[in-house]
Length: 343
Ligand code: F6P
Image (cartoon, rainbow, N blue to C red; front, top):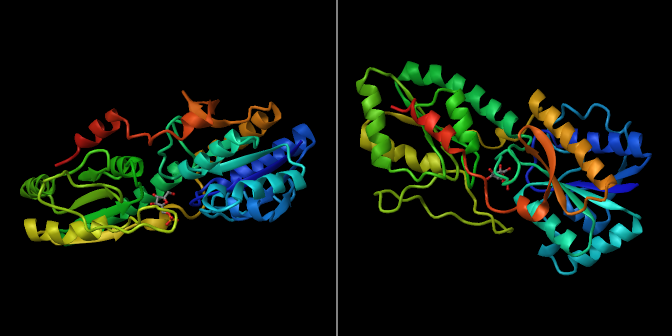
């Protein structure tokens, strides 16, 4: 068996663990070969790759990022991209392709499958927003990183009697905000799924301080939105070259408003790419390894057009079409648990 593998979209802790597991399974169980395309779909279109072996993958398990590089380029975003992919697949004599990516990259994988390219998907994103898998690797690491930061912010916020706005990633849904907020004992969590009313946020902060609390940590997902007609609007955002809304800035927009309305000094911490960098947690390493092995098995079984996923704790294969349908919101019971601890 000859397989290609690529990592596409934003990087994520655990990518190297998936690559390593695919290579190990293919080489040792199927006596096959894996080549890794460089810089995501761009390398697939350009036929830029390196041969991956068990030896090449030694030491990569705890390493963040991706040894293959990544990009947001996609074959359907450029003229003749599909033909370039067909050309590379034929020249390299590949039986199939493993695409490790998030929603956008797996959407392209689904389209490649529909166009006759044998593809298996592996779900990746720190945002944990993919529909048909209970969890994606990278999420646990991001939550841990955000929680560590919140833990540290408590003491400085308390010493200065401040409101601290901690902005975390999560463009469509607020899994990182909800989990790190609960784990870090946040006073309030703002997620995209539940538009907020700024006056209610300020009332809650006031109540809290009236009860004698010296500080408040508010965790806000970058994609959180104010409720319509709630007396507060976010500044307009721009889009990048791939049509993605440029987020990262809501906390800076909120802070002066909260300070003006409550009189509490309000500071901002935007965690940004720190959440995506660094070594994966043990849980993410295990999940990524299970996904990699399962993806190699799916290729071996000819289960093209599927994505590996977690359901009830077990690894399953799901249809790639279903995999990219709509973002998975934060579970209602998680939001309810979080609210019990709000001011
Ligand atoms: O990995 C997902 C994500 O972290 C989003 O939450 C974030 O908005 C986006 O990637 C930013 O990625 P980039 O700046 O690399 O496009």
